[in-house]
Image 1 (cartoon, helix red, strand yellow):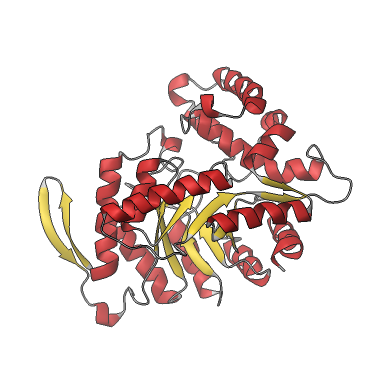
Image 2 (cartoon, rainbow, N blue to C red):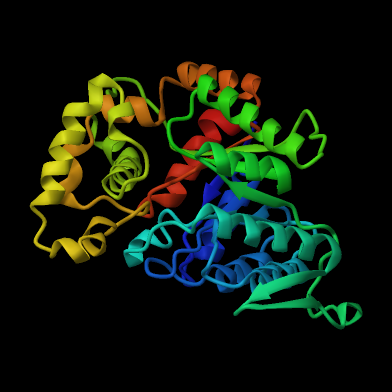
Length: 355
């Protein structure tokens, strides 16, 4: 099992954060592309790429429609010129990067068209690009001058949490990134959908086709419970991010486990009473998203939610959960660490699990 971490794109800290991840044995640093929340993903990737030597750097994830496909590929290929062979392109529909602007994720038809263009540009440096009612052949010029580098090949991972996007990952991707409740049964379903997409595209996937799962882990110390201060601090932002997603329509609340429905009901009532006008409520919902927990949302971080949304327990219990996911095909756990105490948390996970 590999371990990756979400590294926040803040120019002042991203280099030290990624270097710490590298030092503590994390194999990947994934940097998010959410322009209304964080700094620029590629600027921060460039800073980290220039100051590290081993850790792999990925967009976690680049958002369809934020940039046109030739710009997305040109940007990641520029980072590949700084850190050849250590760069990955993660790409998704924008469940946060777009919802924070009050927009829905990109429609699947448009998403697949962007994925196909990116795949061709990464493979052949050219594609037929459709825009503004026009169809134009495009290709990168002057590759010999190394303004950008498409070699070594840049792995292309498609973010997928629904059946159709899972199939798109199988048809076009070199790997898949998923999120949500990460349990063996869900991973088995994901693999089935990825295989279906591969068959549709006439591809034969390797047995070790990468599956990267975005989640959070907390190894309980002696005497700790799911209500302990440190545990809530480590898990609160992750639980909050999942609640934000459900409030914005990502997933069906009816499918939530019975034990956590009352908490979700209370959170729904909390959202309904926000001061922001309903047509602008997305601006308030996403405050702190994936980075920190607003104090007024702490009451929703219950033991039931922590247990159902993350990997938590004693070291042996966490290792058993991780081993079960590995047996089902998960190749990497991509951890969403809180921005406060970031490096202390990396050190703890390194000592408890990675080493």
